Length: 101
Image 1: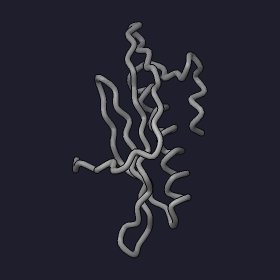
Image 2: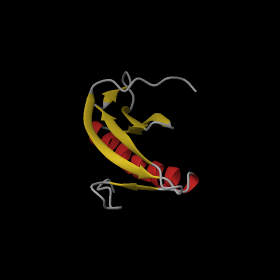
Image 3: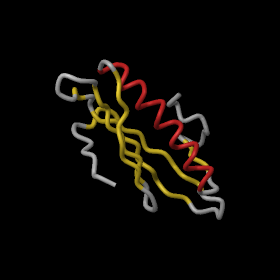
Image 4: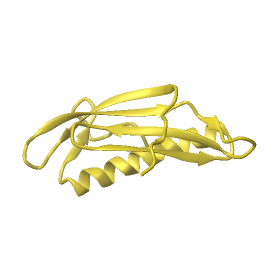
């Protein structure tokens, strides 16, 4: 997969991932500042990174607000799927409501 630059980090949140085996790891979620793709749509990069995984991509919108909102919603879905795939659970201050959707 091609490396996607995160650029200027716009927002960051630390989560905890609790594996099905009882292991715990800190996971950092970053949203980059939305940038325009030439004269085309806007892109908002995001990064989900823990000790055992890394997911970096972007969401695309017609303006910077749409790109940002879609990135936030995409991160929420990515975390849900990642948790299920790895048999674990993400928490934020002990709560499963991560405040992202």
